[in-house]
Length: 253
Image 1: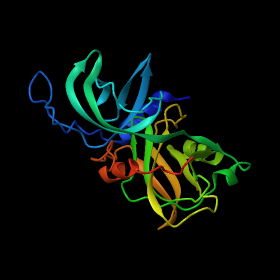
Image 2: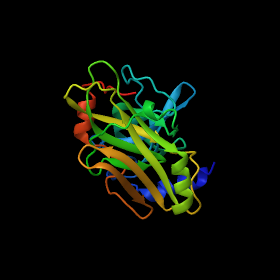
Image 3: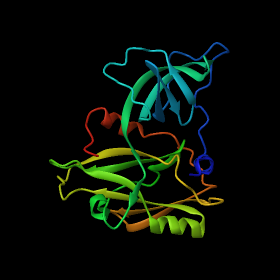
Image 4: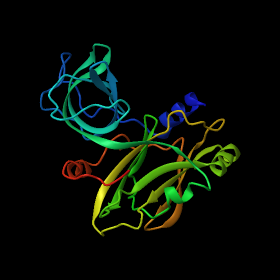
């Protein structure tokens, strides 16, 4: 495993946003300050938890009443919060969480001739800019043609051919696979998934990531993320998507 190289790769692939809020004074932030929707990873510690935010760093939530939310270690979330202070108890910020939404969180899986049918390769609709890489995760927002019964499967996979290609050209080769099990209703809703890239073996002197996917609009395509690429929206999630997510259950596995 080449974890250090992958972490460096993920860091270089996206330009982290500077915090959009400025503290009013040395004592903290205004009560009315809040962030846009941001990606974060849940970290459980004892009977409590904190968030490792892709943009703001480690966040200690001071509010204890979060309804029916139950933190799961390693779970990716989209969150909106009110920053209260900096450098709080060993964490980068103390915050009041205003909204938190769990995101389907998955690992990269191995693609073989035996399991290829299981992963499928149905087309998927992803708008430009809705794939980002931050904090060692690939985050994808897409439009899902909802099923009537069977949950669809979305996967990020890597075959032996991908590993061989990585050794040849210096890119981390991955494939996005989608299986709708021939069960679609024609009703489209947003879906979100975050894939953990941490721990993947990367090529020597990595140049970036090449992602293959079957696009509804463009067919089979390959998207290249260069090391020098930067995205001013990296780490954020669309506010409209978060609003819709609060009102529906995405049918994914």
